[in-house]
Image 1 (tube, rainbow, N blue to C red):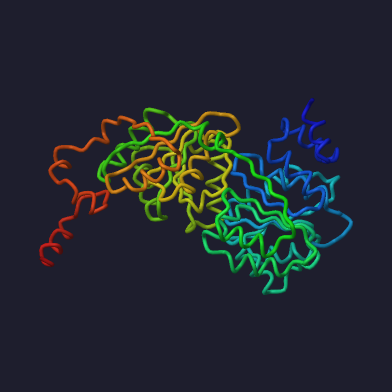
Image 2 (cartoon, one colour):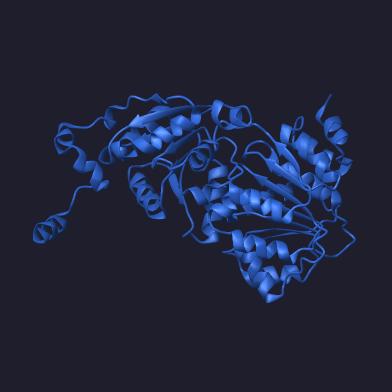
Length: 409
């Protein structure tokens, strides 16, 4: 059976199946097979599926099928935790639309010209893809009307609540009609997500795609045991050895992303940064260069890279170790996608042993250790011992700092 027939059997019409064929999209993924018929049937749906399982098309195709172009009001609303994910979903939508469809969409997220968004909202808009903060801004201004929304999609719900958007999400939901259909997509189902679903969804049907093989089994995982002083050197040695086509380097903070990016640029690496302090225009330029493989390395924070689905990412580098299992799975899920193999390297210092133990317990196995010459402690490191780890710095003290330290003593 070819892909066209399979999507038609799920209930997707010829206009959209034709676009899928143009994109050479083959048979539906498990989450699409389960979620599409339920959403077309009008059911509320809770879908537990990670990025990389085809979940975006699992809600976009039914949404497009339900839109009535002749009705000039907002019928579909997709809420996402980050600007990058909003932009990515918008691009997927635009790739499915044709002039024949007559459907108009708007992406509303921070960093864009709000007046331009308002002008667009005064025109015909059928679907809005938005981040919570910017959407609430429009609601408070009275520039958006959600009273006729028939399908609300909350994408990456766990991350949305994890970064503190619970109140905003609830305020948005209350602006939509009680009769709406709600679809909640989440990689994990923590307590707050379950509470949200119970409060605002009506007899939801559950779709649970066990996607461990997508995010874990398709990715070879290694640990590089090192020290904070030698971490950057070890990272460069691994990159030089594995030669990633596209690689993402995760750091804990925006400041560490910028510092690492500047230092690696100075060493001649083709790298740029992605974090929340960049302007939206800069973020979009960086992502376009990365998608087009003009950049080989991207240093990023977790929030900035949440939900990014970039074809061709061969390697992930956890420069700073993730501090929970969910973050680890999210990070390494950027590679090893669509049946392709990927590799993930986690750089762990002595102070990281508890986080490493937590990750290995979650995986149910020990991660393979990667022997990297420059990661090994020098005689100086050995002599300094644990105080080096406690200081948690990637550079020696300057003379001025040493003077201050002596004065404190």
